Image 1 (cartoon, rainbow, N blue to C red):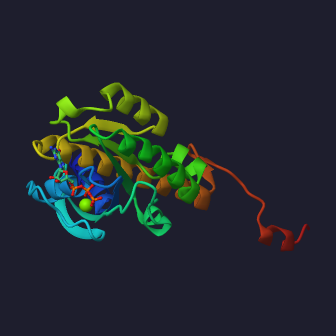
Image 2 (spheres, rainbow, N blue to C red):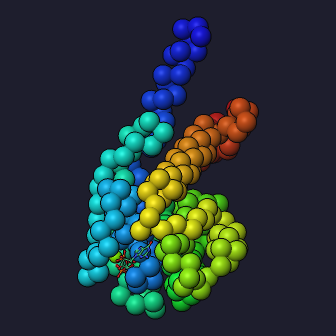
Image 3 (cartoon, helix red, strand yellow):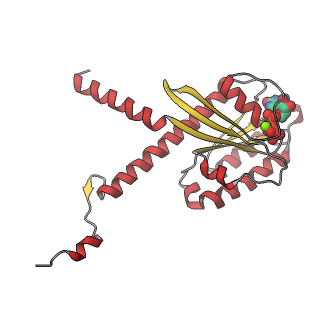
Length: 226
Ligand SMILES: Nc1nc2c(ncn2[C@@H]2O[C@H](COP(=O)(O)OP(=O)(O)OP(=O)(O)O)[C@@H](O)[C@H]2O)c(=O)[nH]1
Ligand SMILES: [Mg+2]
């Protein structure tokens, strides 16, 4: 490796770090699907079994993703009933959304469709289509297959409809799979930021694909024609 490519490598690492430094996630889903269990599993690797149901819980925690430190700010929502929709401010606040249902509870699966429509209302259909707010669907309580009400195929179809990743998990049993699904969401958020940064630069510089484009601006009209 020559010194130039070494420098390039260092700059790339620096840029990656700054774009990945803080990630805001909101965990959504019907009551009792395991939102808190999954959040605590991800943040502490622990499974306690019983969690506070009274109010939303907020966490701020630094975790390394692909060797780079990332500050995860997570809002674990507490849903009072399966007709309540998440607060619009929370949906707007999020960089990424984790949508949880329980494979043992069909109504929690159906609830996510309502939540998705609500996300589209809040963030805009076009933005959701463009994946400006990456999402992840987790079908939790995968250890309770004897009580299964939602098939894996249905979960996959839902993820295709929402155009996002999907995984069946068990907060009760798993650590690494859950962590990896959160890391992947974090990578997607980082990709969105890079994309938005590039398109902002293109707009500011008036360039696309390296070609400079001339835009007639307001000040042009005040220029003398002679
Ligand atoms: N068997 C099994 N039980 C689970 C799993 N995840 C969570 N639970 C249990 O399901 C119950 C609800 O879990 P919570 O994490 O409190 O669910 P929640 O979605 O945060 O619930 P609310 O905050 O009330 O909306 C608890 O008794 C958990 O122990 C899992 O993967 N397997
Ligand atoms: Mg909870």
